[in-house]
Image (cartoon, rainbow over the protein chains, first blue to last red):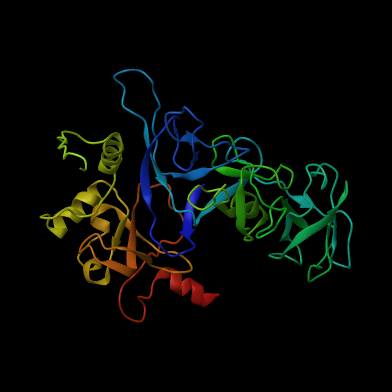
Length: 238
Length: 129
């Protein structure tokens, strides 16, 4: 994840904190330590309580006498909007799965998967978002409101009929939604995972989605979810 | 009769003060007194720090020379910050990010010249939409 911008228009505030974890890469995030810890710790991919900020450099934690104390630079603005590439597995750098519609739908509200595509209700995508990346509705997206084993249904119809062969990308996130938030991150904390049920993952509030509609290939590789830390210690009282 | 006056010599810092000073020593606290703005700014550039400059100081900084790029935010192009050159607080500071800093993404306008063609790559692209 990276810093995209700040909601307030302020400047990034970068502070250095004692660390009790090794931060191997820029773009992870830190949470406060448990009682007895030596400093902030590297966040987790699936849960994220009491976030401190985005890591801006790397550090190596050591308890050996004579080694340097681990100190990490964190961007601590609680209104920082993070840009997180959409991926698919625990490994960063994978591309998103496309759903190819197999049954024409003149109402513009139903997308039926092709055998081999992810089942809409496993992992559950209800309350997520589905975006058209190929076909008459290219560039449009809708919130998913019902799912079954084979069909994504949206309440607000796409502007045009959905033809067989049209391609879509379904993700478990909807901006400003009560359910479609939280992002399950890749192991290195750099990307958000498409293949996870809606509502699960690290406590990040989804702010925006960006699908590159230049081509299906672009959409699979160059799509991003924008999010804010939802349990930032400088903002929340919990 | 009241308590007698007892004077206690203060010979060290309290633990709280020590931690505060140690942590504070790691952080950027602005240009110290006696430092010339230009020298201070180039020192910060060598350290690859995030740089904010006001309208008066921005023309004196050559970002290319130090490997910097201008960074703008989409909703508010500038930042509300303290100018690294003159130490003035300013609501429209120009932002510069070092090219090696991986944490920043977003908008890096390619051109910022003057005249009708110099409005910047990003603005031209926005207008075309």
